[in-house]
Image 1 (cartoon, one colour):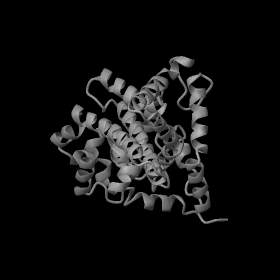
Image 2: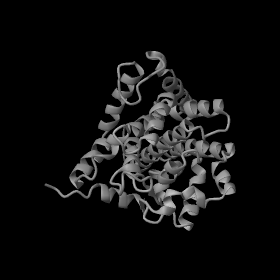
Image 3: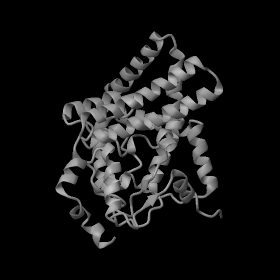
Image 4: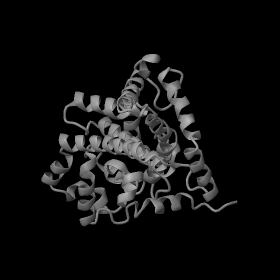
Amino acid sequence: MTDIQKNWMEHLSREELDELLTVDNWRSWRSVLLDWGLVALSFVMVAFYPNPLTIVLAIFSIGARQLGFAVAMHEASHRTLFKNRRLNDFVGNWLCAYPIWSDLKPYRNYHLQHHAKTWTEEDPDLGLATPFPITRDSMRRKIIRDLTGQTGWKRAKATLARDLGRSQGKVRRLDFTGTRNLTGVMVTNIVLLAILTAFGHPALYLLWVAAWFTTYSLAMRIRSIAEHAVITDRNSPFGNTRTTMASWWERLFVAPNRVNYHLEHHLLMTVPHYNLPRMHELLRERGILDGACIAESYGEVLSLAASKAAA
């Protein structure tokens, strides 16, 4: 880590820091509503043009937006989704977490530990990064498990065990256990099904379920690999966390809501997601990102993660 990186905040003015830290409710609403808008557009596309191509495209698009909801929940966990804490947690759960069978409260507890203990033995996300690099064959098998629903089924069983109080995992319930924990996912998914039914297309709900079991799993895997796998220096925040420069189509299918600017997020975790590109520009202009862990595309990241030679 260079001298300028050790004291990087000194190279930003107070005005610049205040601008980066400003939570804009409208921009947060825009992100959440855009995610739901793209989900709705995927449903409409299949409703009007039902064929294998549109169905596959919709499943990939919806899976990416499900990751978008997970990212918005992540924003809410840092209380950077909305200024008002009640609104922040309400939207973070009812419009983002619950529809994808997640929950803000247990997520917040373990995620903040990830920030405090990044790339140490106490990092709850360490297991997501340490297996890499792997061979191409191993990566291919992981992707196949994701797209065939095997990973999703495993996640469903683990999430059910968590909510019923039968799990001691990293997102175990610390508040209460039992079927009441299923209320959020059940209510939000019933509402989604009811809306589709009201428009005369209840079968479209199967696209949501299929995406959750398949493409959402793949998008989450790519996200976790890009953020902390095959890094350059586990002891430096500029080397143990990666930012990936995403193209427009990568943002559409694997990097929603500026999730690709992960190094910047770890440097200052209370910067809202829509301000991370500006933060990246400021840091780059001042040479603070020289030698930092930055990839030019998700293809580059996956190639690095699958670079281990076969035995």
